[in-house]
Image (tube, rainbow, N blue to C red; front, side, top):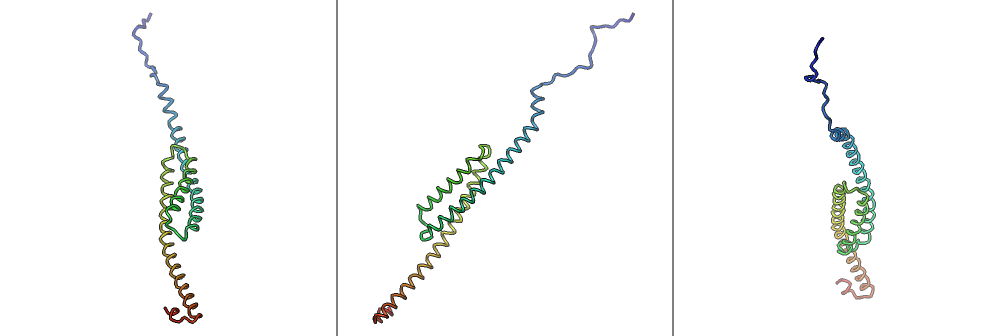
Length: 161
């Protein structure tokens, strides 16, 4: 009979122990990364949409402010009120943005605010020049009227002066 030593058997089909947490995490990682990428894209789209909505409101607010302040475009109280109103609009639209994308929204909002401030400063400069032209034209017309009135009353010296 053949003798098989059972105490010295070697098994070659040993399976290695698998860390179940590591394998589960490794399997879920691509899905989690894809979810994070999609969520970030959704927030970017929301930021663009809210920035466009804010621009529409800010344009209307800006145009109304310009109409109200044509005579005095450098009024500091009016400028401060406009700035506060603009920040309120931007904050309202920023509330819809998730905290993970808040920094991107703040950058977009600051760019919008700076662009409107620059535009208003340029408009203010141009409006002051326009107001000066109108003031000079009004002064000339008033002097003509005054001279005409003096001339009609026979006071030619005052009319020429």
